[in-house]
Structure formats: C-alpha cells, structure tokens
Length: 178
Image 1: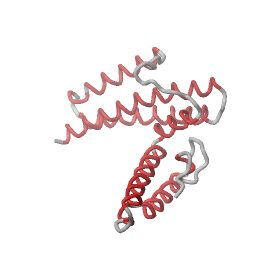
Image 2: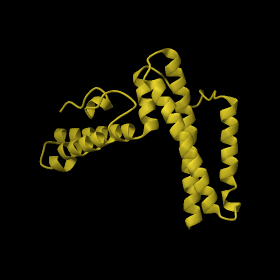
Image 3: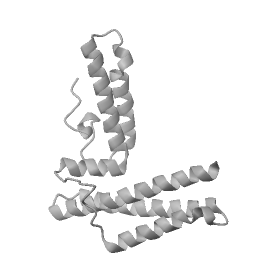
Image 4: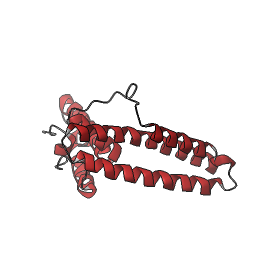
C-alpha cells in the first residue's frame, strides 16, 4: 500500500495549515481499519512487520496534522525551513518579557485565595494568545516568500513556549486536584 509522500497526501488533504479535521479523523479511522496489525495476524512475518510500520506511520502523521503547532512545523519543514530548537531562541524581547510574567503568574497560582480561578484565568489568557498566534501563522503560511516563512518559523517558536506553559499549567492543575 502506498502511504503517500507526505502526511497530507496520506490523508487526502490539500497541503496547508487550514485542514478539515472531520475528514482527517474519518480517513484516520479508515486507514487504521485497513492497516491495523490485528488484520495481519495470519500473514507472513514481512507483511506483519509492514503492517506495524504502516500503522505507526499513520499514527505519527495523524498526531502531526491534528496539532496546529506540529502541523505548522511540519509544513515549514516541507518548505525547507529548518529548526534548531537548541540554538534558535532569538525571540523579540517583549515576547520574552511577557513569557516571564506568565511564568511568574503560573508560579503564584498555588498561593492565590482561589487557585482554581487564578489558573482558569491564566489558561483562558493562554488560549486567547495561542489563537491569535495561530491566526497570524495561518496568514504567513498562506504566502510563499522567505519573509513570510521566517515570520511563520518565529511564530512556531512562540507557540512552543505556549505549549510548554500549557503543560506546566496542567501539571499544576493536577497537583491542585490531588
């Protein structure tokens, strides 16, 4: 079975940031039914091994396309934009200052009179910021010029900060629930 040359092709989607999530989910379920290793229990070793590899490829592609951050990064990589997460940390000072303030607010959540309310406000702020960045990202990814691709790469880096902050907030929330 030909699984396509890229994740979008695999799911029959046009290459782009905006995707039909319903179509993605439907095609994912269809591919899982066809490729699931259980369907190859009586097949040769080679066919079973290929089934496992194909199922893993489908899972990875699905996880990439369903996440706006991972999808954007993948799109940029398809267009030749490289990421070096260890070295490319040049973000504007205003953004970095805002990140420090958000981290401080997150660290102070536990000491608030109502930590759940404080955490919910912070999570709502993060969601608004993330949505605004994703809108801007979609605009840049719709263009092909180098400046737009560089702007999109920088937005992906910013979204990575928000993703880490979101994870930390969720960990704090779990701690508060315990």
